[in-house]
Image (tube, rainbow, N blue to C red; front, side, top):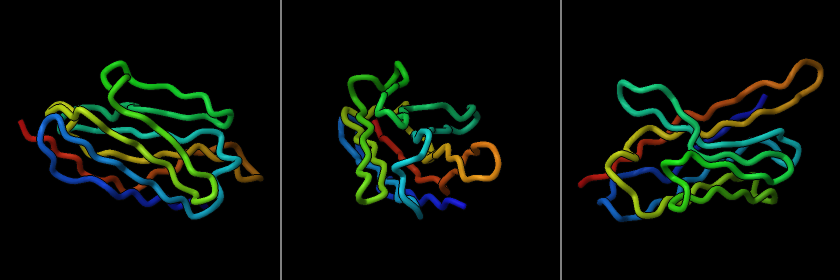
Length: 120
């Protein structure tokens, strides 16, 4: 099992910054991938940013150039630095990890979510 705990959400004005953190209950060194998703009211959950086991990054078009995903393996932590925030970034942000724990296929684990609200 893998537990993920997010923190760092809050209320910020448009143009401001926040940094989200996601601490895992075990080493993230061998995780297939980790990422940040978000879900706004009435909308589907969407991928914001991801990083795979090789360190390859991917971003949603809507956040590229404003958000940066990083990880600190020694601290078992995934980060999302969010700059130049816009009201449309308002959502609950979830940490995700795709992990292979033998026996069995890889599976996804989710954190509880952290609210980000951007005021105009």
